Amino acid sequence: MTQLLRVQNFNVSRDGYGAGENQSFERPFGHADPATLAAWAFATASWPNRTEPGGSRGLDDYFTRDFHHNIGAEIMGRNKFGPQRGPWQDLEWQGWWGDEPPFHTPVFVMTHHVRPSFTLSDTTFHFVNADPHTVLAMAREAANGRDVRLGGGATVIREFLDAGLVDTLHVAVSDVELGGGSRLWESPDELDDRYHHEVVPSPSGVTHHLFWR
Ligand SMILES: NC(=O)c1ccc[n+]([C@@H]2O[C@H](COP(=O)([O-])OP(=O)(O)OC[C@H]3O[C@@H](n4cnc5c(N)ncnc54)[C@H](OP(=O)(O)O)[C@@H]3O)[C@@H](O)[C@H]2O)c1
Image 1 (spheres, rainbow, N blue to C red):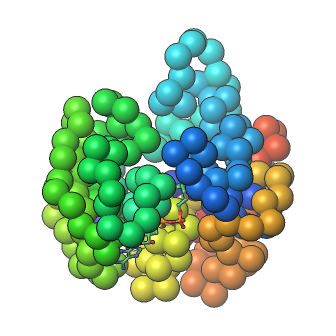
Image 2: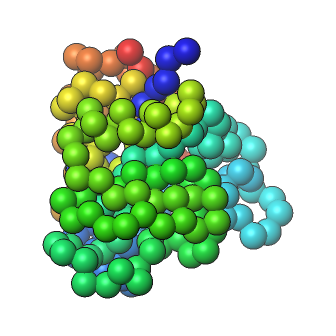
């Protein structure tokens, strides 16, 4: 069975940024406000961090509910994992997600500065210094027949797009402008030469862009 490489629930601003500038420990998304960029997802019944019952059950919920479906591994960039740059100053840092990271699979963190793997609950983080083809091969093996999620940020998504490795993308465009940061695209139409592209506006105000090939 084909193992897909899937981008899911990746949030960008109207001008195509997946994160703002000046990321820090206090601001994982830099000057972008995740509560605005991902407001559509936080409002759904299937949002994994939901602490109170309720939430919407419409189209947006379909996407948050699908997040874990048939995923066996995740690939992410080092800046999604944390705000440190260059050689690791602090190996105590184990990501933003606390003792129960929401991945529940092996996670391959791409970086030129490798460090030992570690496990939190049922998520193991591996640090790999390799090209996209090699990292994808490792993730596929770890995924044990299931699909691989490409979790972002925009830098690694662009790298895998350039290498022709992404099978499906779901990008949610929010009606906010960031003006700078980590950019996925200037326009979603940039991918139209390579993918079928369906634009699905949601009643919540976010616009879902679906790409497949
Ligand atoms: N909008 C969303 O839905 C969403 C989703 C996920 C993350 N985010 C946000 O996006 C931001 C991070 O995105 P980003 O574009 O700045 O960075 P990123 O894609 O997370 O990571 C880029 C880093 O990955 C490493 N890397 C990339 N390609 C590599 C290769 N071929 N070999 C070795 N290492 C490689 C490099 O780290 P080294 O410098 O260590 O070598 C590079 O600086 C964060 O603010 C995060 O919170 C947003």
